[in-house]
Length: 157
Ligand code: INI
Image (cartoon, rainbow, N blue to C red; front, side, top):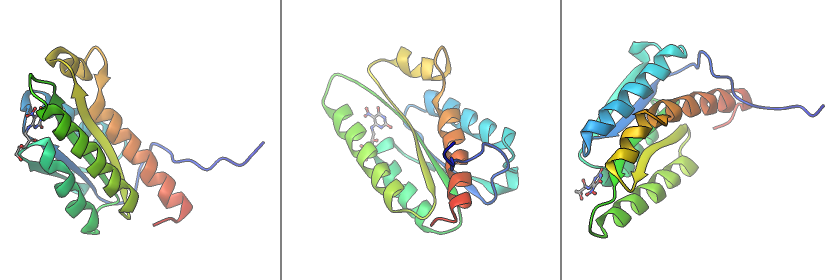
């Protein structure tokens, strides 16, 4: 059997941040609820959890970069919701946030995960914010816990 190095989903050590955008708040507030619930139920104390808010998903990468680089957190969860409209705006916002958070995840010394919905319709967003397709905020939070525990196990920065 090969040796497998992976992270557990329980009792991560250190502080977590959730960064959430206000635009489409009727969805993002449910992503936030899912993320906080998942973190707390997996052993993160309320006192070890901070929530940061920004105006829209376009602003999320800048916020996540500052939070991640501040050195206070072992994990940062990014939450937003971009819903396609009748103009190319969607492409710009969705493209920038994926690139931006991806860059932060590559360069930060902490775990960074991506709970940003990019959907064609409001219904698809609702489904991913706690209705038919689970809660992608909770999924991103659980991925963050696993990565935090993996990095701790690896002794990795
Ligand atoms: N921001 C979102 O978070 N989701 C969207 O669907 C969206 N659309 O489609 O316009 C959106 N726009 C605002 C954008 O994120 C910025 O806040 C704004 O452009 C100011 O910089």
